[in-house]
Image (cartoon, rainbow, N blue to C red; front, side, top):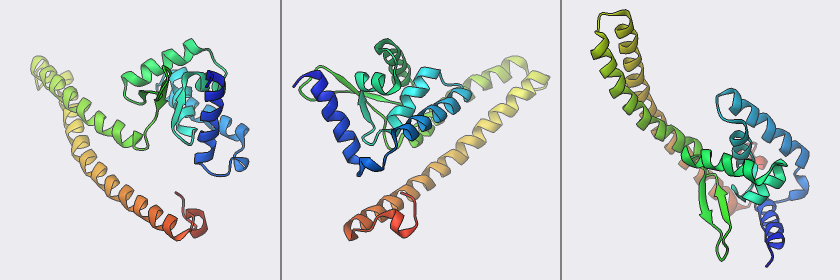
Length: 197
């Protein structure tokens, strides 16, 4: 199968996974991608990485090739490559080989936000250790030492709360998934019950 034919098949599969693609307004999806990407940029993410991440997030399958990302975002392969490199380094997307092909596909996972927060917990632990060294070297009674000591205490508090928050999310997520599976078996969509998926 030619690369163009495979891309077309991938796009068809992508739209089928979400159901009725006639209900999807491509302009509205594009606006969402750009609006969310702008918010990620405001939070400190690189612009192209934010656009690529938002585009993957908005695809039904959560998986796109570099060519598909370039086509959807109207950008060069080099721009996509740089964005993917950054997103891979910070574990926001994973790279996988397309079966029977040399092409890579890039995936955003359903538990992306959970995973990002869980990884942040590891970073907080490393930062705490370094900040404690800072308190020791600056002296606990100096203004800088007190400021850094308070930062350590904040990170300790945040880690404790984060562990409980992530556990509560796992329980909530599991219940949501069980409810959706039950509704699927009964042939009822979440929208019919007045719920959001």
